[in-house]
Length: 157
Image (cartoon, rainbow, N blue to C red; front, side, top):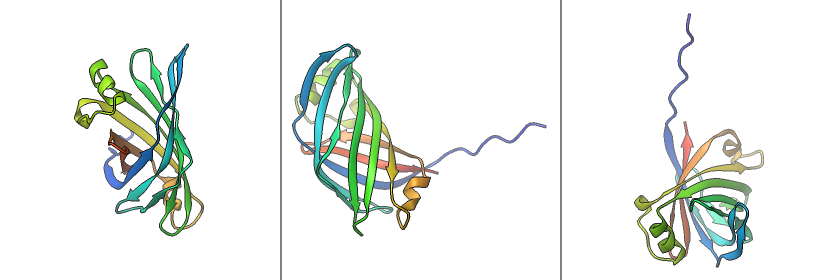
């Protein structure tokens, strides 16, 4: 007797992160690509499942690979409206044509439909009202703004 197939996952919108970023520092070429350091200076979290702010002091350390794709590696803190600090580890991938990459790096407004920008945020919250973040898988869709990054976070059901 064959076992039934696992359930098909769904997506539920959880919240929107509006992360503000500083100027990127470029370490130059390396054997694996070009490493940047982008400070995360603040921001907001708004949505049906979580509200709060981004504490200054986080960073994104993207690696722009030789093929032009960027591996995203951000670490920062959300402070929920009730004061709870929540650690965020957000890794992802941005893929675009060389022309779109040049426009993004120049700070131009680029339609998010013109490039692939996805991540898998993981949250670490203390036991309490935000403990559900520790027990859930999330995916996100990202886009650039003048001031930073928009991250639409979805709970995988």
